[in-house]
Length: 117
Image 1 (cartoon, helix red, strand yellow):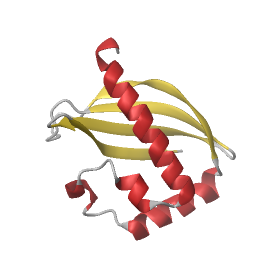
Image 2 (cartoon, one colour):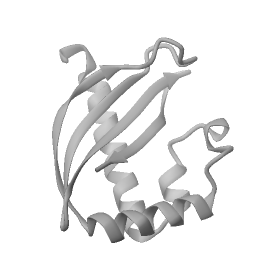
Image 3 (cartoon, helix red, strand yellow):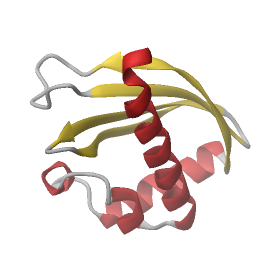
Image 4 (cartoon, helix red, strand yellow):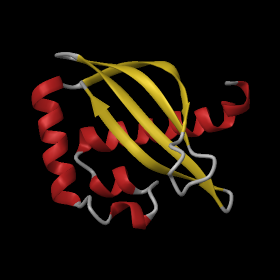
C-alpha cells in the first residue's frame, strides 16, 4: 500500500466530496471528478434516484473505515487504475464503498463509485 499513498489520499478526498454531494443531492458536485465520457449513462435523474434509495435503505452516512486497495480490472482501458474499499457506517446499516481512480495527464479522475449493502 505504500506505493499507493498519494492515490489513497486522492480517493479519500474525492469520496468525502461525493458523500457530501450525496447528502446535498448535488449531482454536479458528485460527478465533478469523473471524465465526461464515464457519465454518458448516468444523469441527474439517475443520481437523484440512487441517493433517495440509499437514504431509504441505509439512512444518513456516519463514518467509514478503510479496508484496502485493489488493482483495476485487466480489461479496463485506464492503465494504473486503483480501487479503494471502505466499510461505511450509516444510521440504519453498513455497506461497502468502492471508489476507483486513475490518473490521466497528471490529473486524477474517478471511474467507479459503488455502494453495496
